[in-house]
Image (cartoon, rainbow, N blue to C red; front, side, top):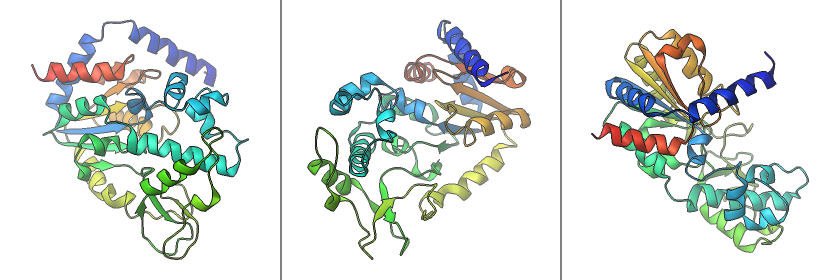
Length: 303
């Protein structure tokens, strides 16, 4: 099967599920969660997008970044990856995006509903998101592992030390003085290390100079939780995970569901909800509106 054929099959399954009454699947998902000894939550971009933090929506760009829409962009993702931007435009856009996604956007209701479903239960979160919505919604910070970190922290680009510092004031300074039409910022507003004066960069995995101590703080607890889950009635609750980085959540969740005899998978995804045939009997597929599904599951669980 070619890539195009696989994507067409995913789209067809998503449309099929979206057209069905999801009530039986939601009831089964709640039952699985209530019977689980371990719950491993995998949260990705689709979960935040369900609450309006959608980098692929022209409506969101028009609403929250009208100047970028006026420049001819159709989505925030397109703007942030435009190779024709100047360096100062790029930094201005990145700062505006960070304020929007990490600091100014309210807590998304889907995260609150999710927390209500698992609060008091034995859960751990694995997330590729960089917006800190799990932390903002009130999830136990000791039960969250975000190996890519968020967009909140800065570090030295050398690095001369292991220090990290919060970027909110940096972002606000950049945005306050940038050109509101082109998003070009001022060179003098770009951050520098307070210790050695070198340029500062965001503390995000993937850089050769990445300072890992904050990101890796919960790695060992997560790995212990994962090992314990292999011997228990475990539910993988996968939320909004597509194919941007499937090796972190989507593929491991599928593989462990197949390998662990007492594991089940709940996959919620607007565009890619289908699971492999060999684990379908131990899985729940939910397409359509993820925010609505989580809210209905919360109500079902409280009955």
